[in-house]
Figure 1: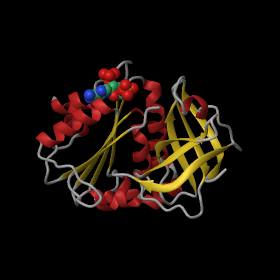
Figure 2: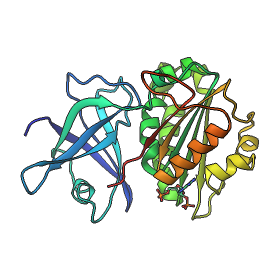
Figure 3: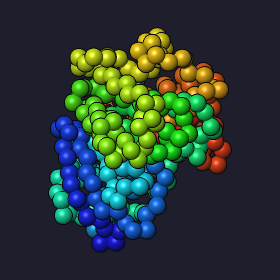
Length: 259
Ligand code: A2P
């Protein structure tokens, strides 16, 4: 099979979410936040591929992905059953807009995620550049239920408590990191959509930070379509403009993949 990589481990988080790690092609270079096409050989003998954000940082020897499971989804109905030793197809052509190159320098960076949209930020939050470029790094994650926050919680725990990672990213740098998880359909310490929490000012108060402004703030958005559109509109109203690789500005947006 061309572009085959071997599955190294699989972890199921909920009945709708799983993550997996695969071997990294020796030639693959990518920027934290980018995605690649991943998939399996279809029954018709043609590859069935979808865009997956790389969740691991660019310095990692392995590649990590975080995926939804859709029972009748063409790809994820099958992909959710992969086991260590199995092969997946991985096209080694990374692309994407959620990269530092697409943003102008700023003081504070916001990573706004819903659901599996946290994947590209799992990569960026383990990239030293994120902390070198900004004085403050804020990751918000909104999910329906508490169990869906677990992947992000463990990621943040790992960043804060893994000695080698903390040393690599810089103990001082990690003080810049603020994590703001919220749920919308199950009781948790902080409930509500991040969009509403920003609008009411509650999120700023909880985080102890000043409201978003175009001079200081940069943002990356990755979640479901309605969320992306709503937050994009809010940021535009605040005076931020959408950037691209070739034209860096104040924020960038990308849709989390749904099978
Ligand atoms: P809600 O439960 O109020 O719809 P999904 O699993 O459907 O992709 O949603 C993931 C999270 O994104 C849910 O917590 C959902 O909240 C939230 N969400 C959906 N649409 C929006 C939106 N337009 N703005 C903010 N959050 C949203």
